[in-house]
Image (cartoon, rainbow over the protein chains, first blue to last red):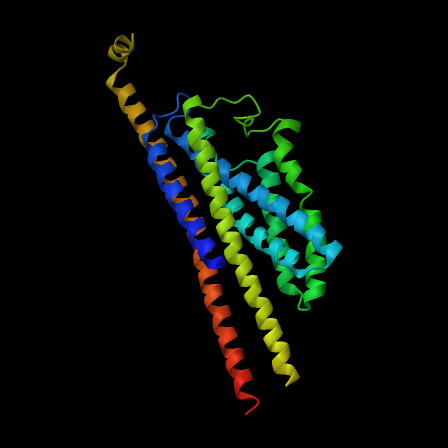
Length: 224
Length: 69
């Protein structure tokens, strides 16, 4: 049943992405930046998906520490890994956009640096998990680390408000301009990318279940 | 108005603008490819991990079935 849900959601996400891509290519070039502005349809949804994953990881890490239920630990690791992939996509597409808009691939401004630090922190989280063998200890240490790493997320979001940055103000809540007739497609694209994130998380959660099954089979094998 | 501006623009200006547009499009193209590429790599990593896990489960189950005999 769960596999069927994954396949259906995956199919819906692919169809939505294909439809959005068709519509996006049909849009005219943006007035100020030209066609490169269309990269916003990937850059921003990837960032929002990654930061949503970080929020879910933060919540499930707290829930693990409170309840000691391993389902929450599994959810935390699943969303962290998925969020890391999306944040990597966001950083790379942002760098390509920056090359055209600013003439540089990278600059150490507050938004870009905090986003990179966020990526490194969550990569560190995954490395920490690989370094600890004992499951309870691994889950506890990882949960504490994940809560600590989440401190960077509000800094990433509000850095453009708190400091003067090369990165512009957001187009939707910071007074930036966005063609009004693009908004509906942007909303659908946002939904499609979030759906891809949900599908990846469900697949990754299933793998965590397999891992737990392997752990219990190993214990049985040792007991015999 | 636009036609007049166009008439005033030199051939060099038009070539420069065409080059700028082409470069802009090439960067957008590479951006989209990279965005998809990152996700495809992640999917491939998940597929290979799932195969490994399933193999390991099958191996452990086979071992446990053999042991009582």
